Image 1 (tube, rainbow, N blue to C red):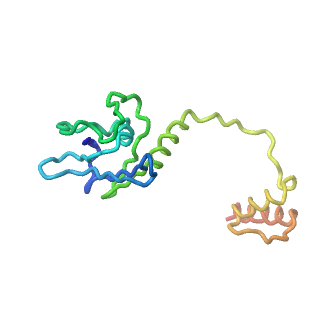
Image 2: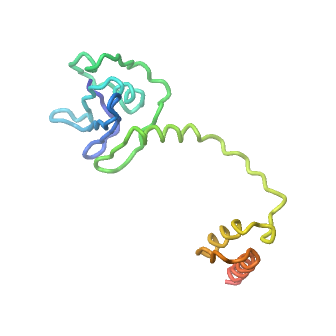
Image 3: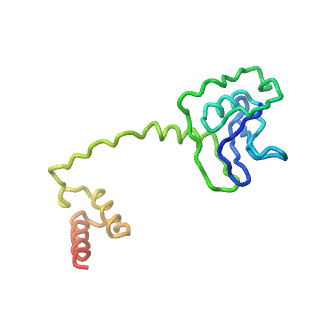
Length: 170
């Protein structure tokens, strides 16, 4: 089945999907051919055709001469609900998008939503009330190096305060 990609990149676009039985990667290169400027690829596996056709940028190419995918599964070309997965856009000459990258993009989009309201806390833990691990993390973040493993928490708190004072003066 010939499928068309609406995104046009110089050199075409490569999409890699896992084979349903073997799990080996199958690559489809969507590119123009002689006499046809559309970016198309021949997709022989029905599951891959179904996956690609569920993404709004992929459509059946007009003039499909064959009678559909070679395996027995039927492809529902009308199942164009909200795009399940949005293919990332790239300016690379031969952009390669794997099935896992497409899935990750879709999952990330689902997770996006209104940001939770951040309420300011009324109590801030002082350096003296922190554990050695908490102080070591602050020391590394603010000073830029890990503290000596045998440093006492009081020493770390003192060094952090000194660094903050020196930074404020500068």
